[in-house]
Length: 259
Image (cartoon, rainbow, N blue to C red; front, top):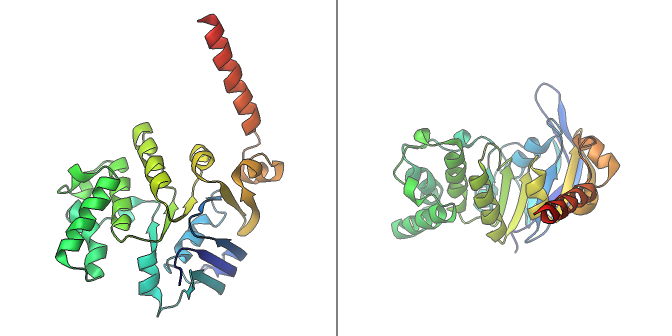
């Protein structure tokens, strides 16, 4: 049995007020894929993220994590398999200290104390936050909180990482550290983001949501050059990647010549 893939089959979701956030969404993300989820604000990205871990329940259709359909009965197993990192790290950090936050998941898995300690160490080292271990999450910067929020998920040793806007409000150094971390996580990843630089570097495949439906699903390099996709993402004023590359090459040649 594999727990490393995500399958949405004709999934709909409507909020209590009647807003239909997802309308017939279907896709399969297989073991080891790193996939970007793109779309403007309100396209349905965060709703889709929450459905992967049953924080929301589909109004219709089916969500599977590996061979497991998400139901109330299978929820504990699903949440061990899927590590969901929220857009706002304050939604994920609630214990008095960082190490207690990181230990929360493994302790609820009823793991032995020694293994819990090993997982805390490994997760904090992975996000370069071992020095934050005894700090209060409330005293951390935004970038530090985000790293610790990711550590709380890594301590569960998930098969799948689902991240909602993971690079928002990060400085350059923290941004690079996060990209390196995600590049070294060899299991399945679904990343909702507006950070196209990260997408181009990390995600060979992208899924584009528009008004609750999948507008496009395919190679990132192709989709980001597509006029319809660029219009849906609000990128028509940004030069296509080929034009950006040509501009950078010309700039480098010019600087080299004058130096």
